[in-house]
Length: 181
Image (cartoon, rainbow, N blue to C red; front, side, top):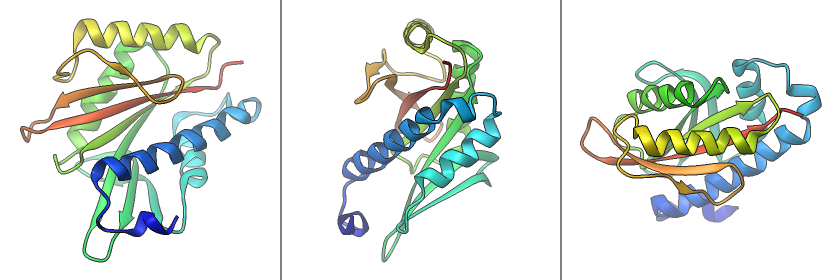
């Protein structure tokens, strides 16, 4: 993926690449749900970090970025670094997940165009839980959500835009991780 190190990539192009890798990494977690289903948030996020890393992609856990963000994902270019932040939660209902959105936005400076919420669902019927999440987010519009959610590019993903305290709009992609068999 030599094109990833091209500093002329737009944020949208970079997001497409990163989100493809994130989706692939989540599928690897799900492929081993029998091994990972009983692990806690920190353990699951540590495994996700190792699956996601590439030679051109730096991924750190619990890094101090206005607090301890679960994942900091960085691509270094010749003159700059672009980063995305992710907050992960073991599923405990839509409100708990939505509280994580505010937490994630609090870590962000406003320079990030996108961020990621990862929900580790360790109980059966992720489809129902993710539908409940979408209904909750669309009804409550938490964390200054600007409009209803859109379906993401893969199964159990949602996208929403949130007004950041800096005044910019940040796209948050919500990933459901099916560990409940």
